[in-house]
Length: 271
Ligand code: SAH
Image (cartoon, rainbow, N blue to C red):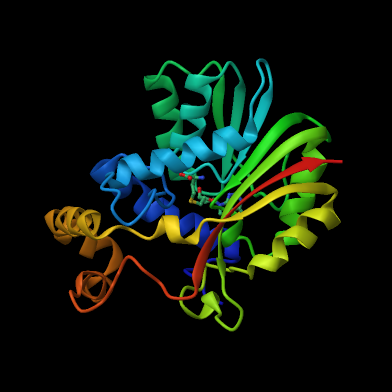
């Protein structure tokens, strides 16, 4: 291994998000997760649809006043800040990307929520927090990057107190498809993996909902997204490379739909 190669999956994920988070934040001020559309005729924008998914996660978390919530894989902080702006809770968000910490912290200060929301550099597979120190938590489209999912979920179980709620939003793949071949930093599993994964770590799984049809971007919204991508084409090429961008914008390819890729929402309780 040369020194320019990341030493581990977590470092590679950190590099990935360090590189593109700022661009993403600037072009669409976005959540780093998929959107949720009611049906194929729903013309909600990408921003509205991603906020709707955050709303579904907050509903599942059902946060109570004064609770401490752990956001495992916090991105640039948008879901955590939405959670704290609507509920009197404290939130700690962790990510492996130092750039995300900077961006998320700046947003917390800007939103005047820095007294209740803070972002820290930590690997979900080895959390720097004492046992039973949080009342609730979520993995919001982050488990997909973690190769050692049993360890990440066991760490969540360790830092959550008994009775705490854990919400999960994640991509999964249908049996027979292997996403790691599509992207080396995605380690998706099949839908039936989640319940035993969580149960083994000490969670009671309360709900597993396959929301795959809802993440499919409706036709009119695809046009909007394509236009936005085109407006930022050059900058995007600098980050992702010409080949990737050309493939994403190929009108023959349905960029916004990956056959065999599903999406699940889960709610669990720490036993
Ligand atoms: N939950 C955020 C971000 C999702 S993107 C949102 O919905 O907007 C995935 C996030 O998971 C990134 O912030 C990435 O850095 C984080 N992540 C991936 N692997 C991680 C790990 N091992 N430990 C901590 N965070 C991780």
